[in-house]
Length: 402
Image 1 (cartoon, rainbow, N blue to C red):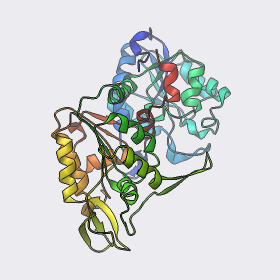
Image 2 (cartoon, helix red, strand yellow; image 1 turned 90 degrees about the vertical axis):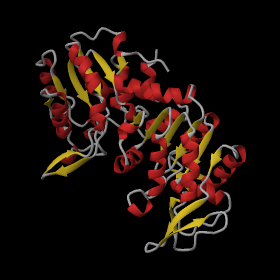
Image 3 (spheres, rainbow, N blue to C red; image 1 turned 180 degrees about the vertical axis):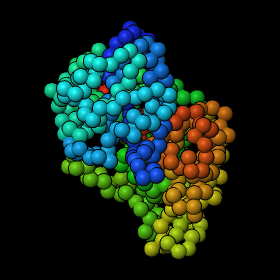
Image 4 (cartoon, helix red, strand yellow; image 1 turned 135 degrees about the vertical axis):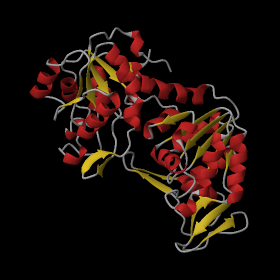
């Protein structure tokens, strides 16, 4: 996918509506609100530095959380402006709205090199409705959109697709880096190419898994995602979490993932690799069972992949040239069930090639038991990354394509 880049247009001295991916959880730190994580802000620094060199006026737009069209004090963008100011080493202004006379007055008063953070755009219900008049108001006083909101690029909202109807738009450097790496996975990965899918649910990953199965050499499944495939193989899983039926309320459809998993196993029987042993617990004790010979008893649940599976997965990973990981192998928040995830991360560090991790839980797991810098690329998106890897065109990327 080729995108319109920053270099493709003359941004010198322009007023930029900079759409950032600052949907970051806020936590209380020493009695005041701060960011739980600043990775998404750091990811945008290279774009901001480019725009500052071009003497642009930079107006920052983002949403935070789900305030449902109401002003929620704990979801303001003030902590985001503060942290960005610290990271850039220059003042970042803040205005307590994203449209209206005060916003327009502040923008008119800006000088070259000034940065202004707008308020949470989701304080207006018109944002999630992709209201066109509201999108038009967001664009008043700006010349160009620089779009770096890759984690929100699958949303049809006023601050994504809406603003792109009213101003010319180019891709920011962070967004370009995500698209470049994920496109390479789909189009020309170095082989062997191994995909590792974990986490709690299969419903949010199924389209990506289906597409990646056509491309990857091996797909390793762990976490509760593996439970769906193990159930499809006929294994008894006791009280393990299995997302066997998913109700799509929008389409008013029920989907039986166990039936779907059976179809995948029949089609890709030599490509998809399931666990052969599991770490199980009844809430008090833990033990390892071989899934070939034993069943998970009632009131026990599978909470990690076992040592045999850890070794099998690690051997496959270490021989790979490209590895993509989405989701933990077990209940990584509990120290009793971390060994599977740790084994995968350790094996990935030994890969002589590209290693990509994606999604919030995967990043949290990596931070808890490793170092993000040990891997080639960290995709900061979850839904957008999975939809991209499913082969779908993300709505907000369409106006950015050459």
